[in-house]
Length: 327
Image (cartoon, rainbow, N blue to C red; front, side):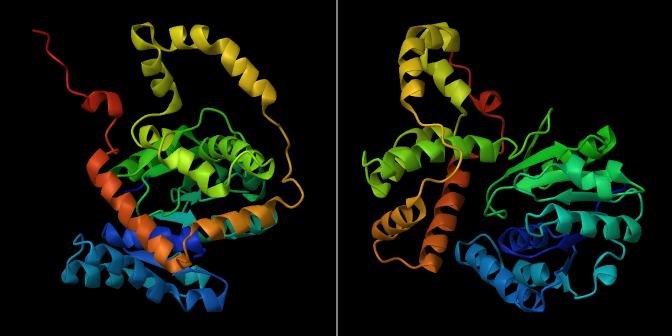
């Protein structure tokens, strides 16, 4: 695959504008396209807002701020947006028909070695590739986590026709930009992050609607408890350490009856219960302490930046742990 120097961003909703901000911050020229004129007209102002956050936190000089903005070309012409780009990050809405139509068009506009990565939250690339006649091997999922310009994780999910070369090239590209890519060995709806968080959220919703606890206390239970550990470790390492010297094997044998009882008591519904949306909305609003959406986003981004600086989570956690010398 070619050396990636210029990026094309198609679709600039919440995730798309995050990618544009991210690429611009990394010093990459990025051509931006969206078929909705109202969305396209606000691209620069929205990116400015994100960049100003970094400037206020002391992480972006005035010169770098201006350079980042200069890297962005906004156009309502898809063909022009795709001119001379070496990589495309697609972030249009979650719909197979819409993505298939776009990918069919992009396949005709781009040279065969230009990777097209979808920011889809759960659709399967194998299905999208059915609309790509010439070069389906360069199409792949590159699913980020919001806010894209701060959270390092990105999931690489190949379709059946995605080439090994595409996967390796995309992984290297994201790593060079300080992302933390994970590559799925098997295609599943929702990938890793959304499946894991959806499982947790289902139980959180169930606890609220069954009157076990309030929205605020359920959320508090996560951020003041396991959330602290999740910032450093995944569930397997957490439970491995929970097993003491015996590790995760001892942990499972010691608590398997307890987990069996907990899992048996948990609901496994696959559609939101009636009235759940309204009850959760009321609970979240009550817990916001009259803060506006914009105020909460600013607070979230500031705290995430502080966490990233403290944890340096771009490193592999085990490799960075110092060896303790015995006396």
